[in-house]
Image (cartoon, rainbow, N blue to C red):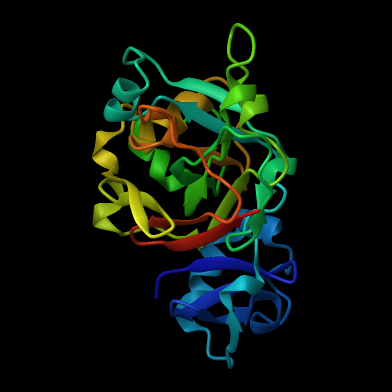
Length: 283
């Protein structure tokens, strides 16, 4: 069984089944007789042990509505993001193809749950569906060939962006424009990708009020997941539970002519193939 780690009531849970509205979960600490931690953040350094638990867990599961899911990575030590990492997105933004990853930081206070409401601030709030990498075993100078060994799993993510704030000043304020409180939801859980052959060719996308806006296979990435992990580790230490937003594909509202931004009442659904779907109402 694929390991899927979720957070419910701030406790680590393994997801053993899911529908469009509910999921079946097992409390990690209770299922392991407290040999594994209840804190979701402590689980990423014990990922191999979690895999073993997921493969043999026999305790009864609890069925809960998806709305009860918390942010699965609530307190990462570091939050990285990659700008302009899809060819067609760079083209729609009128930007040249970068020669190396364009990295900026996001703030921990911007994290949000996978089915939460998100507060609209201003009139230029935009969506960006992204693949989010969660680090398992950290390290320095990780080779591209072994980078996936350092990845715990993947989440769907929304890099919600205040475009007016983002482009205020020179150079642009990427970290500020993409880190308003609640603007960085991830989830619905962290899905282990070990042994998943298509992990480098997953489909990421989102809809707004049922209208598909983004739908791209991640082979359109300029820098692949293993390249990004290797590159970041050549600069700084990576730690268990660090997260990396890997960039948005084409189709963002800012790229429309004229731009089409989110408004109160809009519902955005974000889906990452092989992982799951998040749903957010903007208020």
